[in-house]
Image 1 (spheres, rainbow, N blue to C red):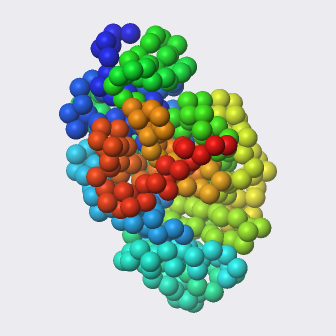
Image 2 (cartoon, helix red, strand yellow):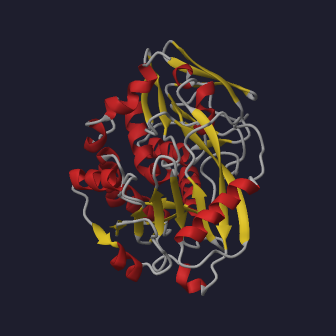
Length: 388
């Protein structure tokens, strides 16, 4: 490899979190930033691919509500400005489900965080505003006016381009075998040679357990099966701005379902948010499961005002689930030159530019510089120190 003798910082994992972190490290003037990815960038083997992702402020946990306010206010606009690309496309968010679901916890978290732009609607008003939905078992609906669709593929492209402009060394198709601290540097063994770095940030997604022993029993990989379904009406009815991003908060036996308007490819995107029963091998190549997609269709038939049309496309992606669905962020105990960023359980993409800033700050200065994160950083770092 035609590479520097050593790196000021090396990021392991080239998904959206790794790209955002490498870009922020380079922006801060670190000499010789490297980004190592075992596949080609923009691949479909992990957790970052696809045309669109949901962004929102509504969460069941006020910590995430506050962090999303920062990301919406500061980090996404900055990335859009620097890349000269529109990456967040406005779309109302709707959160609904039966009274026995988690809607009240979401409403309480939003109120505790003081998030603006979120209102409670009775079902009659919700049906008037969002006629594509039947809301059959809901009493109330949360309407999140901060919601939207993140152009996921465009975001990866924007980060990739900015990384290269900032001089990041991108090492594709490079399989990391081991990461070990050694004195004043970190040794990263790969299938293409040994790399040395002053500091390393691990953003390896579903492969994080291979490099962080403390997380091997803490995370489980679960493959998601996502469908894109035809809408039986006019296509204009299901475009961002007319059709919402949505999350169904069911009873414990029902689980959580989600979906997006048509964006980037034909069809309404929808899936079951599967965070339990993991154990999938991230290296396996698996086709979308017809039975899982049939269940998605059944759900849409029950909750939309008109049943969906044909399945136009299907894909899979990986969730790296933690027991409480929280992120894992912090320095490795006993190895402060190694920082871990695992934005787990399928809800990390919308945070990516902010998480890049946080991880770069932790790696370089030991502090993120983001007050909303610093107040709760011990919560996110706790799994790294736990004994499993």
